Image (tube, rainbow, N blue to C red; front, side, top):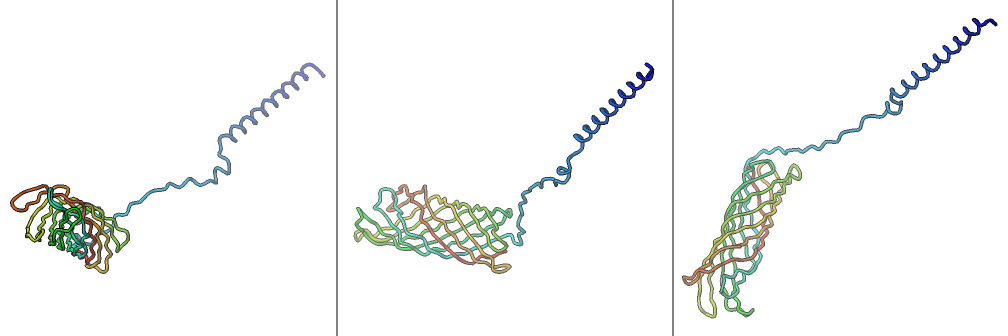
Length: 237
């Protein structure tokens, strides 16, 4: 074999090796660039979203007259013998305007009257009666539990007016008082028709600050919460 033939043969072999190397490199590049079949068949992850549904309100006013019981407790002007009220009937009314599907603003009034006893060192001094009127404004969150059921949670802010009379060791007395009422309220209602439902309420009447007067003398008059429960119809206007 001549030298020219040997040189030509070596050139052809070298060219063949370079071609094979180029084809292999191109195949590797394509394999890394393209997604695998498994990746191509995997669906994109679902995005979860939270939706808040605003209830549709077909009325603007909720009127709730209720009747219930005011649970007895202590009600004592400063410097006086301990006074305790008996459990008494209570009337409580509320008119609320729906300012927002989740919020109401309104006014309320409640009245109760019952027995009132005075004590000195746990010894009864005499019997009497008391009357309590509370009125003010209500601010409540309004949560629709279903199309017919509603839960309301809020606060009552207002003023108390009190009257008491009776006897202490055979001597008659009369007294008046008043002060600030600040209390939470929890209410539930269930709608029976387009305009009528039924509702219940759990709350209390308190007086963190106030004054009382008896015999022409004014004294501080504060008392702890007197709890009450009440139920009644609810009207949608």
